[in-house]
Length: 309
Image 1 (cartoon, rainbow, N blue to C red):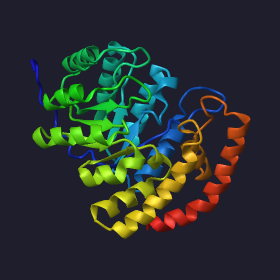
Image 2: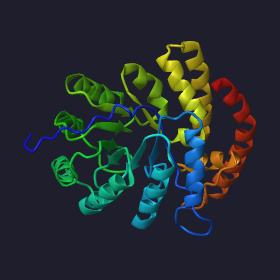
Image 3: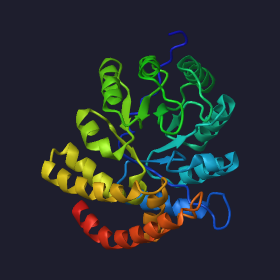
Image 4: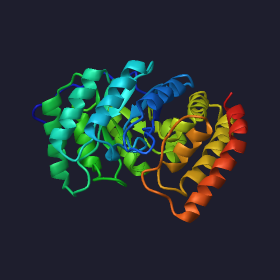
């Protein structure tokens, strides 16, 4: 591929990376920076190996560019673990601008989706990622962010081509497809890159198959659980893995009943952290269910945390 570059090493980015929410100010749709710093402290004190900002769990599409910039700048100064920043935008110029600012603020790595909302061909998606790489260079690792439920898919052919080129340091795979993950794994054996899971329900299997870690929205509210699960997997403590997986699945069974990330934000409220209002009001039935979830979570949390120790 012409213009191939070698992305910088990203060996420090692995394990459990918490996909943080973006706390919202009361009665505004802007990011509460004070609450963001409290969340960064909460996550770094509870065993995660990194923090990812402004991904899907961080609801980046709702916030102005200035809000995104300020959050990254404040969090980068506060965090004691590596910080990934999603700099995805509906335009190439917007993604480039956000990438340069996040790099200057001290981000350890960047994540980039294909341009979203409008449909693009795979040739156009390839051109987008090549143009981005040409513009931004290789001063910080950049990770492909494949999450087809919300935007255009990065086909496996395009993903493996970009990763083999050395332009991109790795990929967060939120496709939910083990076939897609397996194809990535085969490419990583030929041209090494960082392979990060993006779906909690597949984490155990993908970690066993060779994923370097996970970027997890659940870990924003339950960092102890995901960190303990990762330790158990890597230590081949399968009895402990089974117990922790049961806890994770209990939480996920509630979370899937609501628009993402409503359950994660409510769980953080129950842990006495500010998360702010939801982007859009729930139906009356789901609002009632969320109250039921909050009561369940308060009773469930102490036992789940005991399993993590």
